[in-house]
Image 1 (cartoon, helix red, strand yellow):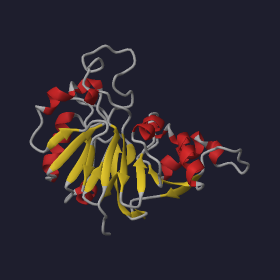
Image 2 (cartoon, rainbow, N blue to C red; image 1 turned 30 degrees about the horizontal axis):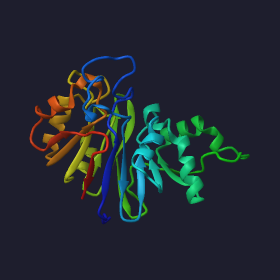
Image 3 (cartoon, rainbow, N blue to C red; image 1 turned 90 degrees about the horizontal axis):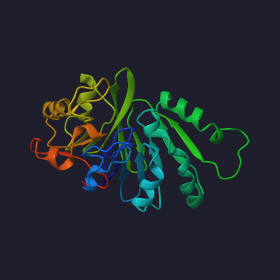
Length: 258
């Protein structure tokens, strides 16, 4: 599948609590560097004709307002945790202006959570103003969203299967601590990879900083951005100086084009 030119925008790069974290007065949470303010993790992928987002966390509404998004074609979900799902109701605004449902792409596990949490969007009798969703159940087979080719990549969040996605030269993976060899083959050849790097200390279900760096080097991806970052990782400006060449911390509002 050929891929058109893409623009990727990091809508959020924070972990489930966001940064700053409620009630915390650590150096990161009180930082005046805007790069240390992190909404829940999500990206927007845009081609000349198609716009999609990966995950709709609790900050989805503000992310759309901040980026002045006027049109959206689809939502792709990585997994059913609330920090990646909770903002889906705000898709209603796009329904109102486009006068059509939004296409939703999710595996069966996430679809079950969407249908449970947003049950009112799937009832036979619908009241005005509810989200209008066109559900597509996906597996690991590649598919198209408009003119954007999508290759799902299964990764593991402890024991939960999570979907990463490759869009042409760009691979996006969040909430993972293990990737099997067969799925790594789908990533090889990417020009850019995004990985979760929660903190420096070991974590039960996320890559830590060292593990994320090791995976980038193993796969030989020339450019990497780390996301799903907690306040425990440290100040953006400090950690950036400690990273290998070609490896960076992502931050909210960062864009990539290719």
